Image (tube, rainbow, N blue to C red):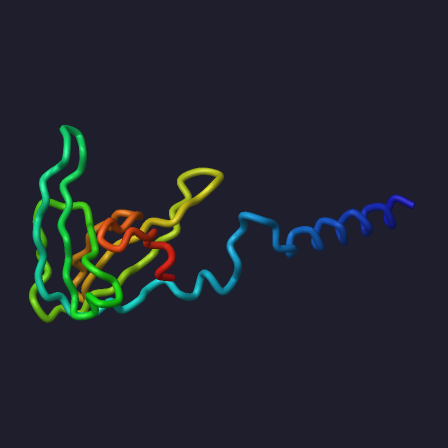
Length: 129
């Protein structure tokens, strides 16, 4: 009797572990973590709107018609004209729950965290993935 209850309990546990619960990541979401956004053209800096707000740089790429100017947190931009730029999403899980952060990077390990809301196109950056 005890063996059959234990086997039944293990089967229920395993079947629940593989189900797609709301809020969990789907398997295909983990594969696309980097997206090409064009070659770097230029950037401009904008000061904080009020004290305590972050500095932003606005990055223009060769695919500006698709993405618009991409806003990232920084005072200066170290990308060189012609650098191939990519958007990368990184899953951070400091505790029990995690979240995605988004960054723009080149092939030479220069990267900046980008703001989740792109003011130029008025969209969330997560829709690009």
